[in-house]
Image (cartoon, rainbow, N blue to C red):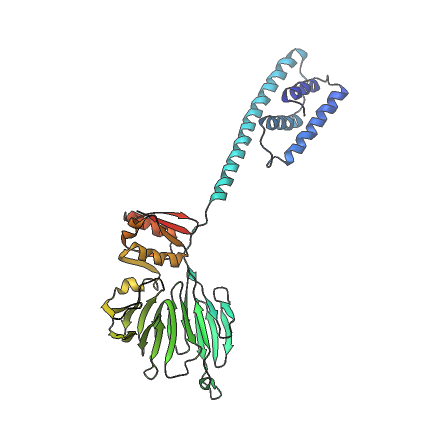
Length: 388
């Protein structure tokens, strides 16, 4: 490859008609070389001389040769060269800067972290035969048919069991088959059992239940948290088993929080009455009360319930009334599917109060908490670090 100065001198001879045949071939070869360089423009390291030379060649190709008187020719030619060099310099700087900006934007795009979004209707249904149906992927409509029972998914993220009472139905004469609905971290789901009982499952929870209630009771097993609206049936009480605690009702509305990382199982009553028992202790709850059964403990503590805070998760909200930051972040971690760490023990001593939609981006939620001067935070991947 010839230098820029050699090319300009050669071009000057060519314009004045003084090039030899060999010089013309050299000039043509250099033009071909520049054309090949154009194909690799985006990938090669930017060289300012190459840019200038390429733009010069483009200008020369599109330029018309005007014959001037000999005494004006030299001065015009040098003015022409100066103007073209100025244009080359300007265009070269422009393209070099554009290349640098493109590289900067590429780095920014590469380093950009995907936002942590809120949860939604996600769960999977495990049938008695071991087969599993991913409910958020399953199409609406009929999912499975078992003896006397049809399982359907509705458009609003609800699983419905339809029980068929017919003279030819012998379901009551056989052992019932048990199904399980499980929500992951970042998931929630609703189910209507065959007796009409409605259950809302919070994130990281599961409920095991028979396809049909064939005995003298209606019994289910819960892990995690769920809200129940039990269909009334005085002849057949509804029983929830959760981590060694039993809640028995005939028809009522209540919430049970039985996460394994809690120190107790809490039942909050909204309507009707329930009998809560754990070990040798048993209490009756009235609407507006909650019972706390300490795991591996004896007595059940009864106290006024914070209904608004307890039911916030079902109503699409986070509501915290001077709640310890560790309890707050338990809920946040389950819903956004993130791990939570604390910079030191002092960061765990804060309390937080506030209300915000649980469908906000996690940064919006944490920024609200920062405004209260309770905490600071940083996010690394799917890890949230809480700092004093």
